Length: 308
Image (tube, rainbow, N blue to C red):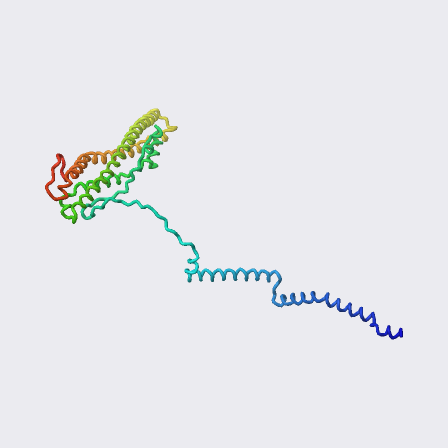
């Protein structure tokens, strides 16, 4: 009976052998799978690093294409994205309007000027030093940069308005009252502009008169130094003295020209300021007569074409 029981038990050696074979199979499986993956990469001629590199490139390209498609869609169908934005509330702004009526350019041939009345101020005309080179440097750097052409245009503008035959101008207009006020407004604006020109010219004249007087003294002094060295036959710094004398002489010439130019313009304007003011006064005194088209009252000293 005992023999029969033991005969039914499996052979232990066979069992352990089978278990060992199964374990070996399990341990060898990952290596075989890894070997298969490496063999596939070897067949493609790729290393693991290259696979990662190409994968990253694919991700970047995919993202770029997706973004491009989105932008194209947004451009083709702008309404879809615009509707998601909050409405913009317009800001209320106060715009200053020029309430002065504009004179018909066919009737009044005036010239507009961009003269900046703050272009010259008291600070720009202060003499910062009694040294001529420094003063001239200030002038050359255009701290005193008033344009003579602007002054001329300003004067020419009011001269053109002044010389208009007012009755003919009003007769040619559809509304005499409107045309009258247009003319007076233009006249007054040009007169105010001319007042600033006169003020600026007076400041510049004071400046250049002082500068020219100083440079004259320095030219005389440097001239004396140069000829004293020449008479004494001193050649060590003779060329330097001559250069200083020449440079100061050039500055004197330029500054004197600036002064004379302003004097000429100022005198031309000053000679006619009184006539300009008187005509404006006469026009205002005869407002009703001019608007109605009747005979006007003469004002002593006023001639319509007095300004040359």
